[in-house]
Image (tube, rainbow, N blue to C red; front, side):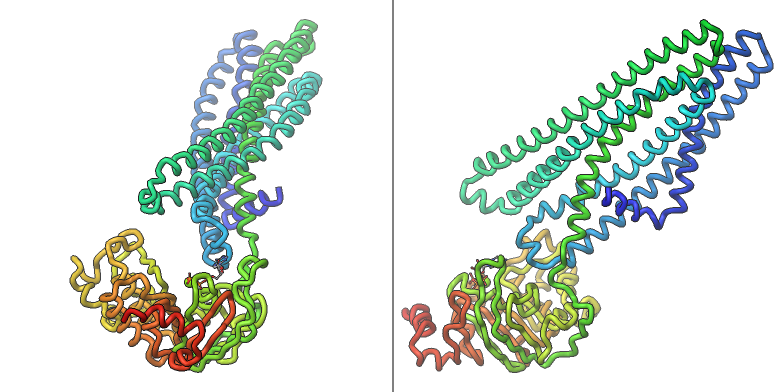
Length: 574
Ligand SMILES: Nc1ncnc2c1ncn2[C@@H]1O[C@H](COP(=O)(O)OP(=O)(O)OP(=O)(O)O)[C@@H](O)[C@H]1O
Ligand SMILES: [Mg+2]
């Protein structure tokens, strides 16, 4: 219930409209209470006393009451939907912000599909919880309490009798509600599983097809699909059981009332019109009770979604600005890595006791076998993760003491896989610095050796790039990434195997662009091909998370260790 209250806090900005909506709801449903009263007057006055004036009054009032009801009905549904949709939009934005701020470690552990399902399914569940349920809750609540008040007014003994069954109905509701909530949670989870399986399988369709694993994927999907079916059916079973149970209890109540009411009329305690009106109210009572019990089930189900949403919103943002974080001033580019130990999972160390120092403007290279920890070092410099022990300092500032934005603004990364957004080439490069002019973008593209191929595209810089930039080659995308970095103009540069996916010809072009990019910047280069790092001021050979050799190309060759071995392997047949 705590989280439902937190959700209601999102209504606060719309409290004025909310109050108005409630008034509309109450007035609209109040009209329903008028009908039984008319029946009473019809029987006791018009039929029994043949009162023509009363008949005219009743007829006119019906028309007026229903006209007014229509107006309030319009107000109610417009206002409640407005509030509900506003809250959905607000929650969606809050969640999106949250995901933008979440540390990398979160995205390592969670699949894209799962994250997407929070924003689509769960936020959708909030909407139905707020819009549909709130309207019904207040409408039915108003009818319920109004009917009970009328009933007390007509005959209190009969009313008390009616209310005996209410606790029974309430108990049944609570028992089922708990079960429905837990099955609702399972459904959402299974749905998220399906979504992420689908997402994963479709986005990796090339791998699936190349390994002829369609059958395998279908089997996997079938299992998840079936699990979702079972979870849904369990939920359906419970919800279907709840409705008839509550209805039956209501029927028992009505029978009791009919008997006792008939007894009172026979003995002249109340009028026939009063009894009919009373019975109409009592029958009307069954509807709100039934609907409220259904709403209760729905709210329980929505609660599961709400719990998940607030669960996500409450996740710790482990890599975040300290309260007193300073702005990192324009850096020179001196980087020192002091006794750094780092573990992704808290069990295995990906880096152990790594120490080195880089002077501004130097080019540093990391080589070593796959899984050695090269990319991990590259991940720590922009503070995608916090070091487990030790410290990384830029110009003497510990990374954890400065504002994340001011740090990352000054670091450029050219990754192995360049991700492009589905917009124009121009906008994709401008992603490096949003306020860059078109001329600056083009200058950066020129410096990255990209201008030529871009101009050859059908619409030049205005060419739309498909999802994930499918219509550009690896080398072209790489040069777009370099152009982005050029535009950003960072003092510190990280190239993580920026050329490893390229053939020799495009590697040469990209390498030339990279060489230009690195001038005057502190650069960290991770490379498998040693030819790209001969010129490095210092080369670190990393193995199993430790630096095992360091020096210039010449020094390392002389050393005759791991590096010179690597060199011999790569250049033996030249
Ligand atoms: N996001 C992650 N979560 C958990 N463990 C990780 C993560 N990324 C890397 N690792 C682990 O950390 C170790 C170092 O990985 P890293 O990516 O730094 O290697 P690398 O030297 O860059 O290798 P490669 O040359 O193949 O890119 C490996 O054992 C790897 O399994
Ligand atoms: Mg790597």
